[in-house]
Image 1 (cartoon, rainbow, N blue to C red):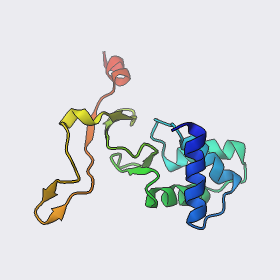
Image 2: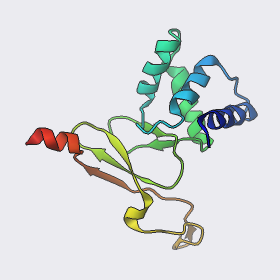
Image 3: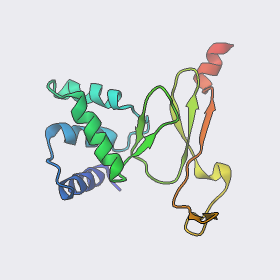
Length: 145
């Protein structure tokens, strides 16, 4: 889906949920689309605040929480120091660098394929799962030598 189409879809979903589409919310949507850096709420706030100086952190936080509750972004909790958000909601995993705290995507093929539509554990029907890896990124490893 093209970036503009994705942003339009976010706008439609927020409007359908009764949210007003403010310039600050549009800036959040535009920043997230195609973003692979897994930003924290504060990182999104810093970017939006440069464009709209009166933006509050609460606006950013509430927008991200609403998007997460609607399934439009993933909330990543693999870094215990802060929450991160991922606009890529397809099945994939993440790796956290324990030195610089960078988060990268890991392709779903790492663990083999699971069909969550027919996967059960006990009496549970599994609707999704995530696996988080921890390690040291190439940049930090190079600095160690």
